[in-house]
Length: 519
Image (tube, rainbow, N blue to C red):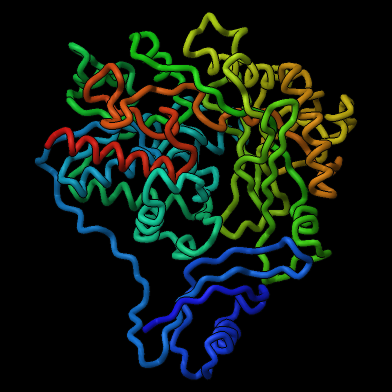
């Protein structure tokens, strides 16, 4: 019977199947020749000591034991061409995994996506990077696959209690992701590989009789007698439906405004906001691995840091080893940053959002906007950044130490942010309470990570789309909107997820609840 082992080895041993088998043989007190296969189940790096170790959980098959491999098979999806339809607004992870789950349950998804397919989005990403032109419906946030498609594809989640994380990972592997994501403690697909996976998911939805419509921007949600009746698209098309999953993502401000205008209940929600900090990856490697050179057996080092500063949490967010910073505005007249890494994480720089938690009372200057107060707070900072950057997609930037000392950087070296930077005292971008918190926080970060607090680090402002500024309330049992029967607020945009995995889980949960309600 296969045996399970947990142990630590050096990075060199972890990377070599023969050395790994020899190590396991010693643990099991058997000859390496008796081992057929060592299957690594989980793997993580322990860099707390100078001698870095790799934690491994493995299943060991002996030569006389049956081993057939670990190929992941997709569910046997039925054809739902003539089955009951469910509208899904948004083709991000929440919407796409809701659609797959609907098909598995025998329902027909009709996915409405305001943006373009993954291939078509590329031209618009080039336009914002090179020409500083923002397409409001096709950008880093909007389009097939949602925000994660071209900003990294990180799969790490703390939302283990929300649902079956392994199921989502296995589905992604079934659609073409590396099976390494089933093993790694911080799984990651990479912006260069995720688009093809998203395309394959879409093709499966269509092959099973579902529909995926691009350029299908919802401009009205039809409600009669407190029940969903369908939607109206920008071109005037009306699509009738009794069930609607609203999975628009955290940047769909027009949808939030539509709900507010129609007096469909939404609430202001706290979120976090700050800057995106970029260091040389070599510097982060030295700090995290306590070495002069990383070596070939270790991946580019990530970091995670949290501090309490003036009664607020300040922390790293969406950290991208070997990555770049991207322009993520969704409307002209604003600057927004985010980060991503290719699958090999082989770029020369590391970046991370460094953000401060906000409270509802921080939105008081925008109280006249009611439930949209947080959104207007967010918008005001993004628009100020655009003005300070010369009304372009260049980003206001400052060296880290200079920022804490209120000193405009005499020159900002070239960073990975393609549209370019403008040297600005970042205190002009943010309200005083945020600026003061970040200035104190960065000095504290430097005490925890020796070498982190340096003028080699460049701050880009703002990192403002960490999560939705609103929550769309729903019944915790049925997941329907508290007022509107048949409306299922879903994913990040509704305030119930924070990343690809948790959004996908929430999409599946909404699909399951719809099936329950139909039954």
